[in-house]
Image (cartoon, rainbow, N blue to C red; front, side, top):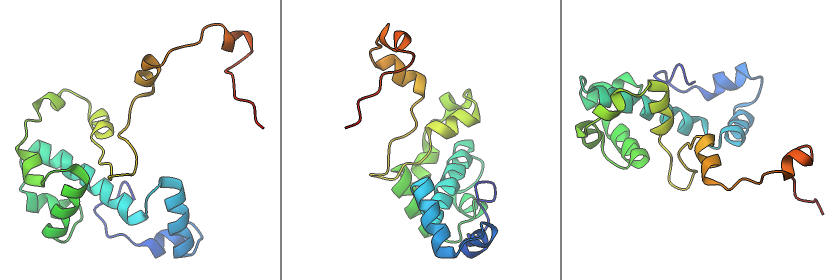
Length: 150
């Protein structure tokens, strides 16, 4: 699904590949990824659209169809929901500072996040640096301390 984001979503075909019913596949997918197959696909499409918009050489309509959307209105609405601004507004911004960053890192930090469905990715190293460390306890006890289970 991630590689073929521009193709139409065929949940029954995906379910057959996974040897599941379509309903069970959708529920299992949601449990594993925290979103439905359709929402996951649209997130991939919006990620790709953002990359194409940053490049700046295609129109919003061309990008809409290039990422597999069939309606410019639906594409613009979903883009605005996920990104917080219209595709045209996003493209008009200065994206030069991101040009020097590897595409894989830009993708991680610009991944669309639906309202109420989590936080953007934060590198584990930055979380470690912001938390105080206990010295001595973990090493002397043979590992990290865990709360007692009651």
